[in-house]
Length: 308
Image 1 (tube, rainbow, N blue to C red):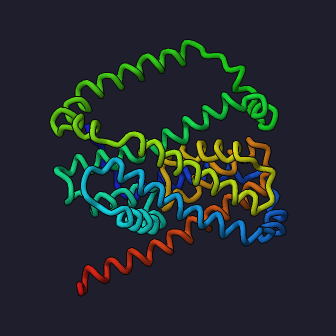
Image 2 (tube, rainbow, N blue to C red):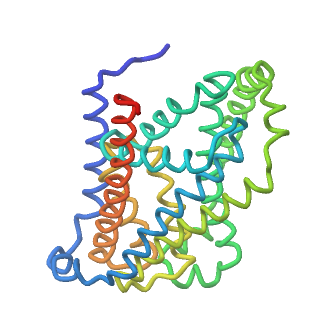
Image 3 (cartoon, rainbow, N blue to C red):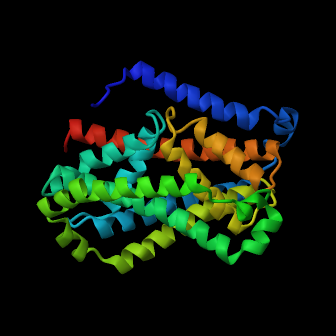
């Protein structure tokens, strides 16, 4: 049975989650320090982080082209990605950007489901690459990680029968879902043929490049704010930020993303006022890129209404 929630009720739920996360993340912050240090930022490094933000979108455009089997120029995918950033400023979460991308691309494909599948796969590749690189960094830099961050209890976790019960039933549900739903759709729409034709080397390469730029953006922003923050810390911060995709939120994940960033930075040993300043400047960066994207979106709507 599918329950259709009233849109206003969904907004209330999103507000509740945003309020709770922001409240617990910000309740012990000394705001006098935030006011004094907010503008203590290196403008060149800030501008570099904004430039790297654009490079992220370019790398993601090349990655998406590896998955998309139809003729389209990478510059067109980049413009779609950049325009979608403006929609993410005014609609909940980031799904509006994906819906916009779907609306621009589905007419080129054999089926609407195939376009949806490719867009989901693109997001999944980005999500998993961030998580996997964080786990790899934990393995490679574990001594340094345990010495610098305040979560040493992770190495002493006891996996009781509750964990194994969750893994057992969760794994069973995933197997049934794949067998009765995913497998049928793969056979129906010949997704196996599509998977064979994917250039996996280029997909992995551009996924790594995209991930590098995403981490570099966080690193440059932290350096602009004079934080004691290394490249490995930026990797873990990026992995933590992936959680914002699964939490009900308002436009652009506002509040939720800031709460996760503050919580993550405090785990990494950053003082709460500095963590809040980082989260606010990160939000400003997102808004700036979104405004640039809105220019492309406005130009496209005008050319569509008044074709030359």
